[in-house]
Figure 1: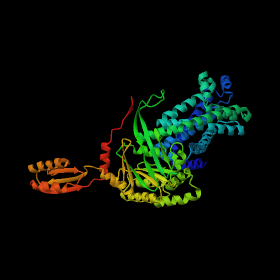
Figure 2: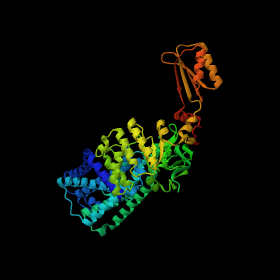
Figure 3: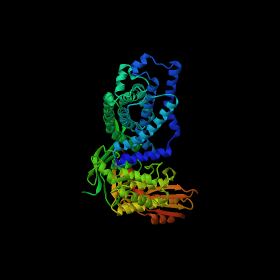
Figure 4: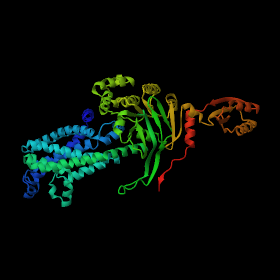
Length: 269
Length: 337
């Protein structure tokens, strides 16, 4: 855990000194935009009501709450992925990957350190988004605190798990933008962040279930919109946790190969 | 236990033409970067690894640093296998590469060394003192709490050297460590390296500054096309440089008889003769031979009626030896269809 703590501290110092405010606005922007568009559609087009069809497919008639929780979760996912999955390719670009790999430190605590800093930062950004939503008039019901805490924890595991194989792909390919944006498109489409995943064709729904973020999203919505107690979400919690751990294990398995490929590219160039 | 880094038939092949990703397997064509290299880098000594660009020096160092895996062969550090015991090997080694940053630009020198100290599990009680000691060693005490992004290139390189020593490595791999450094800083680094070796650290040094290698290394391996072509002390290797005593003579004016006489001398002694003119279009003769032919050449020219305005004798150098050895080495082969 020494490595995790040291990496958390290092990243925190770097972030304090070089936090790009334009990036923060760029991060908050899509979330706020999603909520504003939903708000306008709901008030101006829907007249403050949603169809029975939406209620049946989403399990709630609180359209604004549904969109706000989804937008917040999507922002959390993208921010965590950007920090964790890009950690090693950033090291590579800044010329520090070799000095990292020379040390006897394990990859898991290193990535956990990055993820811990990313988690704190993302939660602070999330608070800004939810504060903005509140100012816009969105009101969320009182959540079940235990289910919400468990939901946030498994969402962390889900995104952390997804980020590790993504990190391996990025450093092996020496490219980040196409990889990360492909993932964002896939999770945005399949995981039910902004619309009920059941509306997708069956094969896509099945693919969505293979991503741990889908179950995490269900847990977060159940905890925040329905104040569901933990025993009601235990199934989704378990599947999210299992899938997140599976992705993390696969990622940790392929990461050393990807690292060597990145070094080989550097050495043979 | 053997206190040394040892390699046995070490090979590293890079793919030249990869298979498509849906057809996994060996690459369609591959070129060896390191080809059957057997080295020994003992503790308490600076060992040189020389070769021209592309000879396989960096690949060798990166394999010894556990950054790359050998395609075949094996290497050990104090009898620990480089692949199987990679984590334990990493505790005993470190690497400093010139021209690579290897430190975090947005952290200060102290924060950088603290971070790497944590990654190397340096005990907390020792870390603070060691950071101060290393910063003093590389002359960065005045910039301890300044962010690295505000450092000059030389200061960054010095910090990189301190980073390379943070775990008190038993073996230090130096890949062009003085690249881009000012002469006084490079000289200080050489003094540090010599002192480390005296303290028992085994150092492997690659450098294009051969005077540096001559000064520091007790033993030198010369590689070409990934293969070992020679090994010896700087003096032994220099002696291998045949035809490398160079005598250069400039005449006041061209004389036909001198051309003939110098040509005859070259044929008789087997020396390599090059003729030309200098900037002022005066004739110039250059003879290369294993022996010093300066006296004989001067006598020949004067006897033939030539007037010598300049005579320069250059003894063979380690650089001549490395170039000669590399020239004589076979071309690297590409394996595959």
